[in-house]
Length: 144
Length: 144
DNA sequence: CTTAATCCCTATTGACTAGATAGAGATTTA
DNA sequence: TAAATCTCTATCTAGTCAATAGGGATTAAG
Image 1 (tube, chains in turn cyan, red, blue, purple):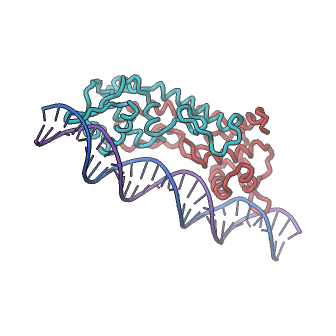
Image 2: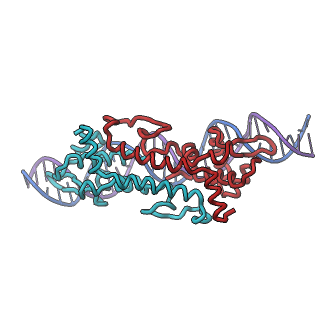
Image 3: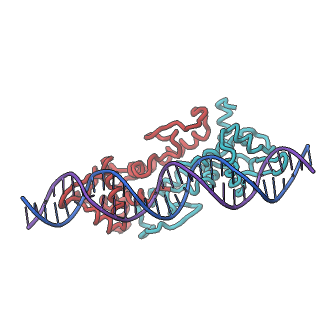
């Protein structure tokens, strides 16, 4: 299961992507429209900023905007920031590999083989879906 | 990420599957061989028993054995017991569906569409991998 | 029939994380 | 210069994860 944080992050980013324009949007507006606790969203956007997914503009008429084109922000990108690796085990994580604590022999581990296949399958999906494809779906559904 | 509990469960079950015989094995033997804290393993096996994945034999020369043929126990079966649904969101879970708390319109949700595709991809993998295929891999690797 | 070995069950612990909130500081624009 | 924004650190509560403890119930063997 993804965290509530991930859910909020995706909603906020999709809001920015769906709106199209590049002008910064204030936290409070995103929070209200997407019904996200303001202070919590603040922390989330800050994290997303550190990885370049969003860009911030400080001062009087500041706010947040996407850090790069919507088509270049995948669901995988976002989930990795909010929830860590996609993999079901550190030993099959591509972005954050780590040996399992008590693993006899990784090359032989049958559990690892299954988890690796699962990781590849999810990564394939979550890396192909991005904010642009998601926003396009919304438009097609008439939700915008 | 899967829990430590899931890891222990898979190891214990794979141990039973790899050994082939149907005679019950005592908790302590599994615990020692797989280096799993005994009391913790006890709790895990109890849960697995409630869902029929393992069968127990009480009394003096009791122990645990698989509840059905190894080929009929998938990784998905085990993970569902120890870690809950495979899905990344309750709203895309097949075995344990639940509406998201603050969802406007599920039919239109673009986040849901991506998470659903991800669920299907992982489920496809984890349901096809079972204790028999895993044990066969071990044999092929010369680990047995 | 008694004893010893097993599984069965409930409770508890300590560490950590998730989700959320508070309040003051830094920056920029009007 | 003032008001509106983002930035940062600290904190709180509830819940979960991993593990442990201590018996009670059941059964096979002697």
